[in-house]
Image (cartoon, rainbow over the protein chains, first blue to last red):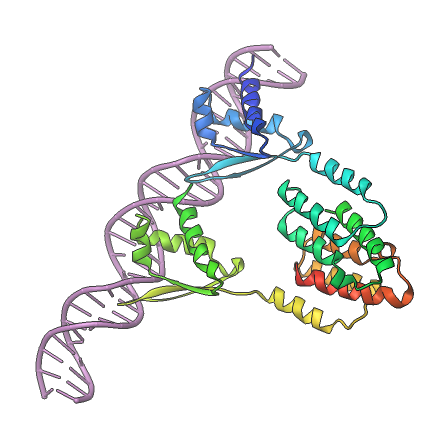
Length: 147
Length: 147
DNA sequence: TCATATTAAAAGTCAAAGAAAGTCAAAAAA
DNA sequence: TTTTTTGACTTTCTTTGACTTTTAATATGA
């Protein structure tokens, strides 16, 4: 088996704990596999391309490192699933529960959570009982589509 | 983790009590972290630049110190100004113009722009002529407050 | 006492050394 | 021919330390 394949596999295993970003140190890894550091670059540029679902960042200098992020579409799938299961009405409470689920699964950030929350809150909508849950459902679903 | 990152984090935690200015003593801090004093300067000049929302002053001599101020950038001021100038109604068109202004001044990103847009669009609100501009104004202003 | 000189206590500057990662092309292997 | 391996050289960021500047505190002298 090729060195590059072994390194690729090793890196992919780092994701096995479910984390969606891992961090490596190029020189350390090269030493571990007894290869030149630039081979790590080769592996990354051939096997961790954006088209393959990865996004790479790095930092040079003391304490430098390479971060590889998995840009998985699980999140989108999950959001789509939620959207499809929201009817044409939703209460403020139901929205709150969904938002905190999203937050705890890291599907959205705190800023997005606040925007969703505020755009769908009763105080902001100030609509009649018949209208508000319908309008809220439309706003919520459409915002989720654009997150 | 890098020494510089640790020091950066420590300084940022000093703001956690909500104060918008903190004071440190360079030599004391250097001793606390077991580094040379000039490393504190390095951290300040790379992590507390005006572009990062901080403003730094200092005084030499006995009892000297470094003051770091969190400067709330004029982006927020601009947004507040806009919010205050929106009445209790706003049309979809007016919102569009404001959003593209915000975008061109880099006050918001494209993602935020999309969320603002979608949450305030006619198609999503689907309300009567009397209601929609009022509801839109409330949603828009409240979202801006949280951006 | 008051103004001035001296000393010491800070902080600032800058460049060298060190620690990573990046690039690119030649050599080797498939 | 295409892909992989290797290594020399480059770039970026961090750490360190010697030297400088500023200012407060203190001492000195009229």
